[in-house]
Amino acid sequence: MAASLSSLSSIINQPHRALGIKFPKRCSFGLRLLPHKPQSISYCRYHLTSRPLKSTFSLNFSRSFSLSHSSKSETPSLRHFIAQAAVTSSETQSDPTPISETLPRSRIYHETYGCQMNINDMEIVLSIMKKAGYGEVVEVPESAEIIFINTCAIRDNAEQRVWQRLNYFWFLKRHWKSNVSIGRSQSLRPPKVVVLGCMAERLKDKILDADKMVDVVCGPDAYRDLPRLLEEVDYGQKGINTLLSLEETYADISPVRISKNSIAAFVSVMRGCNNMCSFCIVPFTRGRERSRSVESIVREVAELWKEGVKEVTLLGQNVNSYNDSSGAEKDVESGANWKFSEGFSSMSKVKNMGLRFADLLDELATEFPEMRFRYTSPHPKDFPDELLYVMRDRYNICKSIHLPAQTGSSTVLERMRRGYTREAYLDLVQKIRRIIPDVGLSSDFICGFCGETEEEHKDTLSLVKAVGYDMAYMFAYSMREKTHAHRNYIDDVPDAVKQRRLTELIDAFRESTGQCFDSQIGTIQLVLVEGPNKRAPDTELIGKSDRGHRVSFTNLPVPERDDYDGMRNPRVGDFVEVRISKSTRASLFGEALAITKLSSFYNSVHDEDVACANRN
Ligand code: SF4
Image 1 (tube, rainbow, N blue to C red):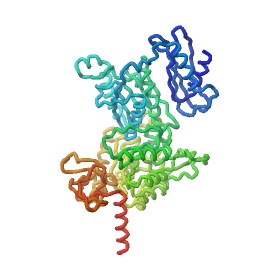
Image 2: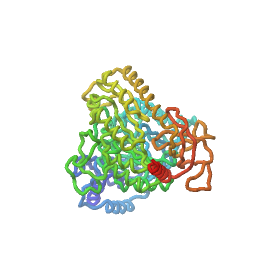
Image 3: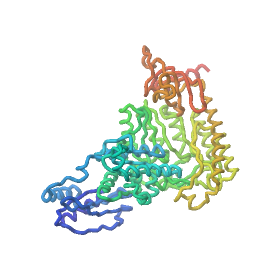
Image 4: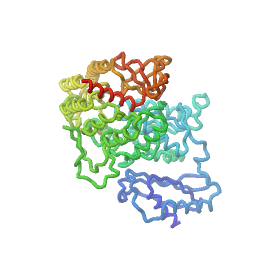
């Protein structure tokens, strides 16, 4: 027994482990491990639970960390313990099969709300589950034994939608027998309902307490723990792990791709946000910034390239604050050498500076010359000149920048704690357009933030007109608990005023974006074909241009640039030169000219530029 107990400490010193240990019925003891803070671990939690098994008494030890550093222990290793446990178990048990292995594996249904990052997280979850033996995914919740709902907490109505769905899932669970008897449900057992993502992080136990609707609550940094949390439910418990991590990036996990679009994919390159904008819940639900290594990202993109993916969007809550400090040799003075966009600042200081976003883009663009790259969502403060020059010089980095302004008023920007003024933002727009003349810009705006006056609102309308965006996400302000605004300001703009201002903003945006679309008429755009246009599936194809505009064109045979004899219809995944002939002010229509390669298209554009320059 002493040997076993010393070995237990070796399990406890292994991060992210859960282990069921069986002892003969006659052998029993009590042990309680209290939470404590071992060196180099910021938070640690142990559960010790007894589970009734057929002929054995089982102990389940599990732990989770907010930091994955484990202290180097002198105690016996996990392998040593497992060897010990195996000897004990073979000597004493006649039926060592765990309960979970006696049941058919559960089928998964999943639903995701919110941003693209959440979709990518669901792909990571599916990969973790697949590795744990849960490989089957079904299309409807009525056929599933496990239901995942990945949630968004950014606005109240996003949360309300999730609660509605949880009600339905609760109905499937609670009335499982009668649902099966009338053919509504085909699941083999009452489904386990699992809440993932930002709402899980924000509401934690509150969700579990809600009328037994939910079995497992798992925050965005704890997905590796899901198989264990689900097993807890088999023993009549609720599973919860909402610990945030300073290091988790899931860099070693190959996501299981959900999208039916085989030619475009998303790759998360960093997680979390250090900015603490006063309206935003994200830093509280997603934790501090951390980046994957360049090497692990290149590896994932190489896999996607082999699978036929032609366009990758790099993801992060503050993607251009990317900082791979894995190879950094020493700490630099806080904030030293970390360049922001001119005139921008940040409250958070960078401690350990490594490879920045421009380095990552440069590496990817060089390594994969026939693949197109986009990124979202950046912060305007992290556009040092180097990043703009890399975007200009690499033809396969799309000339499209999301530049969230949030408001056009300097006083509101200050209350929002955004770290810039209206003037600095407009200067940045000018600089971006000077360095990358054909760039498309998009933005985010919030209407009716705390204390917003009519004057401040008009500043936003005038900013929209002054910049001329290709696209924008616009919302009425919704106050979130925990944020700086919730603690310090009053949500004093009436809903009706917020809605009126939102309508005015949308009108101002429509006017200026229409001009952006119209200005494309007569140009030749390189379009990556995504599939048939749903409005005319037999005759038209649709895809995205470099600037991200949706372009449709008639599906007819065209020449292939790199094959002088060939004429064929464009296919999904082809890059097609399209001459734009019409604009609906929200999408473009044109005539296909040729099928080409990324490098060939931009080399020929470059050759033409040189020829024109020589003629002049
Ligand atoms: S930059 Fe600001 S708005 Fe964006 S995620 Fe971070 S805190 Fe939220």
